[in-house]
Image (tube, rainbow, N blue to C red; front, side, top):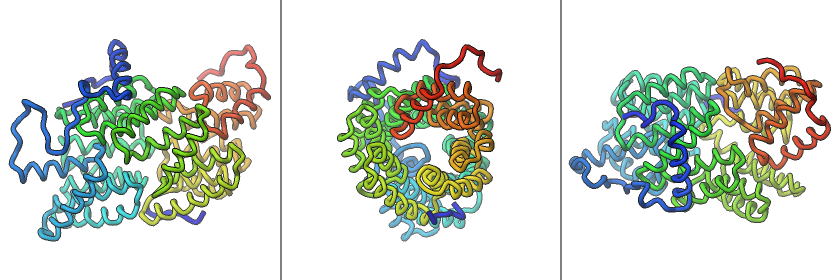
Length: 485
C-alpha cells in the first residue's frame, strides 16, 4: 500500500469505585441497555437546564458557551447539531473575522464532525480555522490549542497532541477540558506514568455536573489500560447515567459494550451496542461492535448484513478489515478481497486528510500483504510514537517475517504490566503465545494461548481457530511452576 504519511468537581470517586457499589451499577447497566432510562438519566437537549438549576445566562453568552461545550474534546455531540453549529460559525467568522473564539469553535466542530462522520476531509478545514484563531488571539489561546490537540488525536499524531495539549494546559491549568487530550496523547506515546498523573490532576479539579460524565469516561479509559476492568465499566456506566444528551449517552454505552466484548460477554456486549444505536443511529463504533458480536454468536447472516450497512458509506478502514476477515474465515475469499480493496481506498482518503494510518496499514500488510513492508512501516511508527498497540503490531509483523527472536521483545512489551499499562488483550496474548511457540518456549506458549481464550474466546474469527489448533498440538500444560516475574 502506498499510503505513507509524513505528518500526521472531580469524579465522584477519585480512586477506583468500591466493590460495594458494583451491584448497584450492574443493575443500572442492565436498565440503561434495556432502554429503562427515564428515571436514571437526565438527558438534556441543547439549551435545556435541570429543573431548579441556576438561572440561564443571557442568550448571547449562553449560545457562545453552548457552542464551545458542544465541541469540547471527550464530550460526544450529535451529527445534525454539529452540522448546524458549523453553518452558524461559518456565518459568524465571515461577519466577524477577528473573533478568535468563533474560529476556535468552528475548527473544533470540524474536528468532531470529521471524527464522527469518518470524513477526514474536515481535518484540513479544522486546522485552518484553529490556526486562524491562534493568529488572531496569540499563543495563550487555550480553546484553539485544545482544538489542535483534539485534531492531532483524530489524526493519530500523538507527539503533536502532546505538544498542543501541554500548551493548552499551561494556558488554562484550571480548565478541565485541557486534561483529556493530554491523557490520550501520553497513552498513545506509551507514557503511562504521565497519563495516570494527569488523570489524578483532572480528578482533583472541582468540575461541575455537566463535565463529570466526560471525566468519568476518561478515567474509564485509563482504568481499562491498567487492566481494571470492573472499575472501567463502573465509570462508563456512571458516565452514561449522568449524560446530558442522547449522543453522549450512546457513546458511553457503546464503550460499555466494547468492554463487554473484550471480556467475551456476548449478550452484554450486544445489549449495549443495540442500546447505543437506539439512542444515536449515527453512532459509528456500535454498528461494527454489534456485527462483531453477532458473528461470534453464530448469527452470521445477521452479522454480515449489519457489517454491510455499516460500511456502505464512508466506512472506517478498521471495519472493512474486520468484514474482510470475517468473509475470509467463511472461505469467501473474493468478497474478502473486495473489502481489502475498499480498505486501501478508505486509507488513501484518511491519509489525504492528514491521518496517520501506519498502524492499521502495518497490521493489514502483516496478515494479508507484504510482512516486510509492515515491519518497515511499524519500525518507523514505533520510533515516532511507541505505544503498546504499535509494539504488538510490530512484534507480530516481525514474526510474520520470520524474525521471531526480535518479535518476542516487542510482543513482551505489549503484554508487560510495567511497560504496557496492564491492558488485558486476547489478541496481544495470542500473538505472544504464537511467537513463543515458534521459539520452542512451549510452556509460556501454552499459558499465553490459553490466556487469550480465557480473556475472550471469540476475539477473532481467523485467529481463534489457530489458537485452539496450536493448543492441541502443544498438548497439556506440564506440572511445572510458571517462570518468575
